[in-house]
Length: 154
Image 1 (cartoon, rainbow, N blue to C red):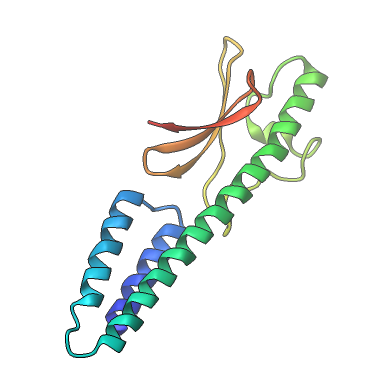
Image 2 (image 1 turned 90 degrees about the vertical axis):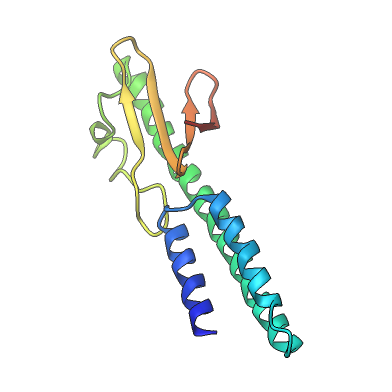
């Protein structure tokens, strides 16, 4: 049981810190459920193990949803600052740090706990790239011309 709890804790920590890969995570859950059900002598123990695994999955998915909402909310604050900067100066800033201190006190981290950074680039042709990573190979990109967030696979 201690090994099971340690595995769940490691998966949780990797997930919260942004090192998550959903495909591997769900395969891991299937393996853990299979392991929980292999206890032939004690069905009560098997049921308890299964409950621990399922609660861990629910907890991790809840944290992911919470982090996604935080990241988008913090991103929306920066987008408002970027738009105001453009109204005042006629162009977007060269870097996010140019917003400090006139438009915002600091550039926040997208996630809780404060890990990771928003990515921003102002191209010479006037295009602006603003996004944050949500998992390996996926980003949540804000498109200024559409005024919306889009999840992209890279």
